[in-house]
Image 1: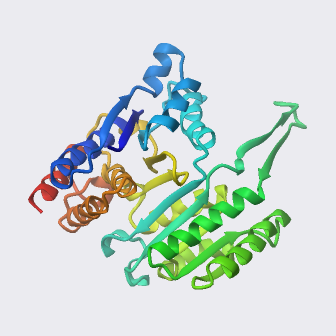
Image 2: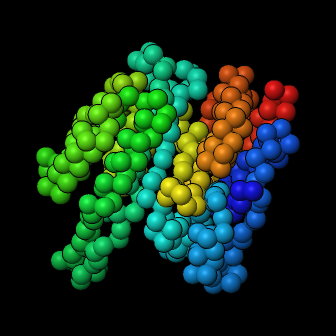
Length: 351
């Protein structure tokens, strides 16, 4: 029986997670994924009440006792340093070695893209972002803080092991999911360290995945092409910073962050799933947040724990809601968070 830890978190997190779990309740008796839930309290409220972000023992338990973790969002203005979010989210990525950040971008309806007449509407790509190295490793610091000659340094970390495994994962995913084309984005023309990415991408592709077409793009050209002709891309693999930027751009192209799910993985171990949109404190408790990204993240979880039919039904329900305008304001509708969740759950029940 798959065991799922749920951290609803801050801001709109509890609202969108509530709708995702509502849909999971409908899924359970139909597809019987057998998911066992445990709600965990971590977030700003818990931190402010106890002074604890998440203990080392609890982090170990997440890695050892659970198959998946579903997170709503973390970030609260009452914690201006965001130390609880850093310890929990980045803690899971680094301490549980969740080196794969998977962010799909699929256009469910042509009306949602800002490109309008410039696209055929056939946009369905996945960005694989290296999740534990790069500039986000936090290597560096500040000298003479606050003085006129203040210096800050941030170092980008790229290890052969880290680069190899994310590239290999992207190629493997492409082969397993019928994708024929993998693109890598870097800035090797200006950052010599990125030649490691180029060399390993070519070696791994040539030796292990000769059936997959591969190409490399500089990150600036990649971003331009993603806007100009997103249909040409199937699988994109890149580093931590570039992957963060490209995945948000891809989300905007297919309708916005309200439709952007993500997975953080280490194959064979626990995976963490979260909507990309963040906690959005100004929207909290107003019943206006889009729950679709959280529901789609839950769908990714279902596929991971062995219920692909249930995951497909979740995606079909999202598409149906969009086509029939049962959506929140960010997608041009007038439904509330709970109404969207109710509609999707009822559509699945009837289907």
